[in-house]
Length: 220
Image (cartoon, rainbow, N blue to C red; front, side, top):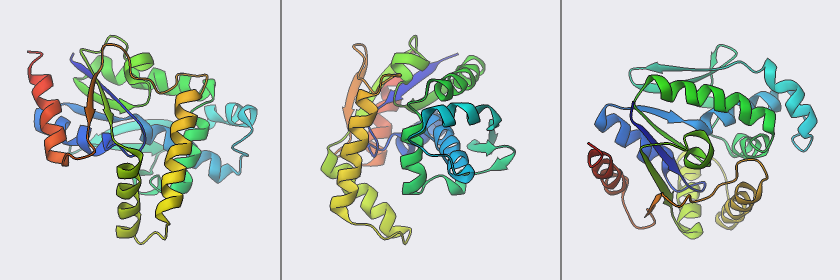
């Protein structure tokens, strides 16, 4: 199996770009962030205090997270419910970042993610794929972009979805999430030494995906 790890901060375009590359190359795309979002959604629904790590840990085992691939698209199932359309809000995104620091949550996700990688050629994106989930990946990429560009992308995305937001607030949230992701004690966001950095700030989705595809083809 060929395993590709893509890490980077929120809003760098990891999911969109990784999904495009996987589709072009016939790989399975694994959006690990969506799995954490499903856990975040579950905790929101339960009314769990997201600052209470013990409460999150005690409830995580009752969150049944499964992955199905329908026509090549990853569907995240939360206790049997396809929640793909429910996990992209700012509230769930923030919750995902908070539950992701809990060791019990990460252990649960780690087992699932490694299991998928053992069975398929995968492009997997997240925060700690190259450092913790797939440390022996065949190729590691660190995909990044400036905070200003990432904020503008998220603001535009919100506007297109009809979600009211403020550009400066979006940027502040991104910077805060970067800090939280990079300083958490459990599997923080890092650029590992053997990762190839790609800055997507001034690249189109197609250009960034093409650059990654070229690197993957170079493995063969």
